[in-house]
Length: 334
View 1: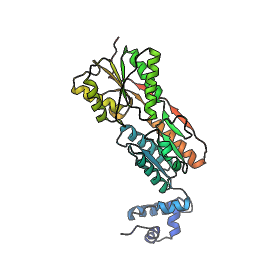
View 2: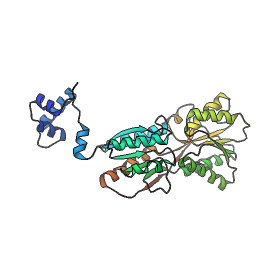
View 3: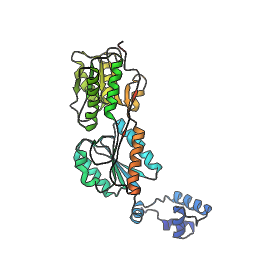
View 4: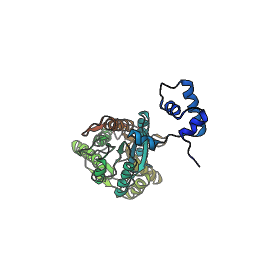
């Protein structure tokens, strides 16, 4: 099998190699009719641009690497979708890599992207150790972190104000009359540490007892939330509301509560965090904290483009505000 080349197209079109090249590059020296004929012929013959060769000449690949810890997570997949749409609108293509829960794999995929000569990298980090783990590589290419607040690290990132999200969610439950609010989640990342801090701050201001049910899992999922909730519900329920640190955990809680005939809402109120698409489905209608996923992805791509195209130095931190989405899983006790 042989790849179709520009010379093959030129021969079939009865024109010179230079004419085909100019037609595909949009040169004004080529008439519109000739350009259309050549483009149509390229399509019929199955010609594709040799981007490797072009990048060697242009010193630019128009590729952006995107690293996420779990593409099967709805929040991550939405971020990836919006990042790709934004990058594509500016002439870039995305190379998506799944790093999984292993720091070694995270480093491996970053090295792979550098080897592919990407123009820049977007990274959703998997843990607070990510920055140190890949610093030697991110120093070589424009990099923006996405979705994780790195606090004072000298690295560019875009994230939601996770602390504010749990703060306003806890206050909402308090306004509904809840005084025993259980926080259900994990603290394996800076994001989740900040979410726990927002809950604690609200409890301190409102005079509420802080109650935690901590996850032994390193990642959130419906199944993990379900297993944890079954264990939680095997004990006396002396609280009236649960604040789940992620929507995935909240969906697991709903599944376990349904099996055990624990009414949500009714017996318990429930609020999640992220606003993934499935939370708005009928019979779920989960009250949650929405992360501005589209805005986060667009801002991260814009920040990365600025570093790629303008050579901007230094770093920038952008924190976007989450929103409370009121649905059907919270009842008033008043």
